[in-house]
Length: 318
Image 1: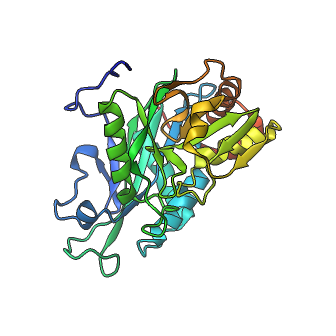
Image 2: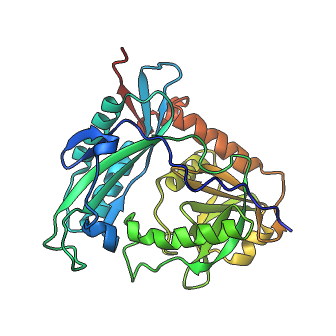
């Protein structure tokens, strides 16, 4: 029987960066509030992003933001589903300003959210005000770096014909939340969701890869996955190392006999999967280990070949 994972007390709230951005201005985090009648709170009419930031170890007064341009492009595209236009350039400028205002001293995570901020009752995307808010919090490991044990969720990933899954929509995360809680309550660390066709889609909030016979395999974009930016980074890193990458539908049974399986995402980074259901995977994970090391090196600004993936923000430390 699988041991119960340690569950953090639910009443604890994380520390947040001191300032947030809402309604066009920066405020102390505690004062950055919205009405209980906010449209997005009731109908999930919001799209979101997630960006990682690190202190540059070689230059402590500088922040490294990983693939900021790609995140801004995706969030700008996601906002179109709400009928809202915000350019990637404007998003980027505001996120850089957010970092400069907060002066973070440790690794952190930024959450920008574009949401229907009006107080109307009817579910709709037209004739309702929209707004951008940004907040952040210190973040180390989101999942255990040593690896996680996964169960196949009884909840299915939504279909693109029911909601736009290429956008990072807040409404889509109800399935993620249900799947994650189901996994934890049944003695696992993480969930793997199938799609409506019975194929592997993704984790609760991250993409999935497996290794078979030296080839890296991941569900293709037609499998109702989020087009993850970390997923794209892993694919590019693997191909740059001449590793064959195959994007295709993946059967559940392949997970049980895979040589390696890992999850990846902005928060999760790259996390090995130790077991799927009752099937223990090999402790020998050379490709996962190499890609994890490569990704961390790039994220920390230690690989000049991927300098174009970094946005460097200088701070004025007193």
